[in-house]
Image 1: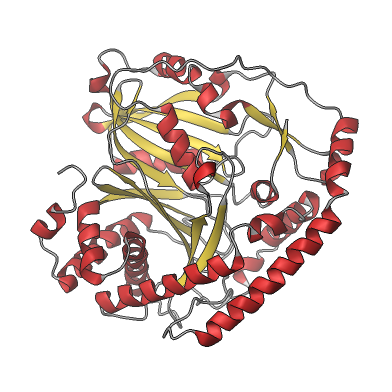
Image 2 (image 1 turned 30 degrees about the horizontal axis):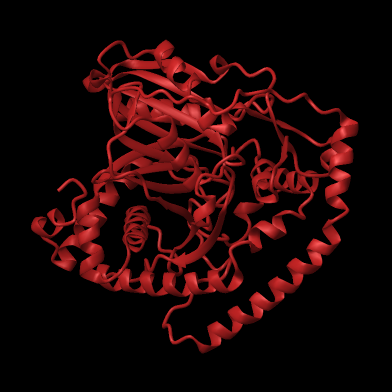
Length: 478
């Protein structure tokens, strides 16, 4: 039995009927490498033997009465893997449109809180004889980095399925009574006044340091403040509907751009997303009154927390410099802003968000989130930011599931009121696999936005003078 951290619990409290806080990924697999039948029963057999490598998969929530404190994870005494691994299909041969439409519908469904908060869908009928695996895990259980570690733990490095023997036998927890839960919560709440005082002192010191850094900085552009992002059509209250698109860009080309400009891969990803959004808005006759602003999740995991589940993440706001036409100048500005943002992040401290989230009452936070959604207040004020952009480094080596080779792994990040588009990318081998989740009632052509990513890359390559030979030198597979 383990209490959720405040940050983990906030992803539960912020969930509304129009915004579900789970993360997902769409893996495309080649079953011809499996050497036998690749089916639901085989998948269940393999994954059941690895549940000890994925602790969240057998843990369910227990809510504290009246929402007085954060919920607890318990080892579910009623766990049955068949409640979580399921099968579906699209009419063969299903192309990207058909697959993305199915993913959109599945992602729009909430996870059942009476069971461990995950599910996996085996999707058949894909063109070329391939299969899809759509996994959904609630954000309260994992972040991008821990989700990536979970993926690697469940898969193999070759078509041969390895055996993983647990060090000790799994045992279920008993379901605690209301009296036990209230006693547990009371003990934790009693220590909060001292924690608040310490957090306030650290935060005040950090705020003064950030202010001093801003005054002393020589940077031409500083990280944007909250609620300074321009209004756009996709920064509004959401409906429960979802639309999804995916695409792959060439990682060696992006690395060649990074070296040509003198920035980072993450800077190039931000620039690509910014230019794609700019093209999307321009095509619709929209002219924002300033540069678009992205919220960028930042992992704050230490080396000894690499295998830990849950959330060890903060976030920063950055300008996407979409008011600059020159692709190279745009990347230079993004790089400058991100350098400043990282310095501010270090001054604030990795644990500040984690500390303050501990003091939020789940019942109050949850009611506030549902009221905000129901009243559609996100459409009434300037957005906190325009878009969520997340870049998760993935494996540079091939992976296999039950013998089937992973061809691509497209992420699916959550969206919420006020920000109707999430652009998440994960690297794999020599690929950058982009997943774009949107609300179609505020952004109606997510596939067009995916196409604009390719346009943006071509513009940057031409402006930087990057050649195919330059890109080849950065291949992971060379």
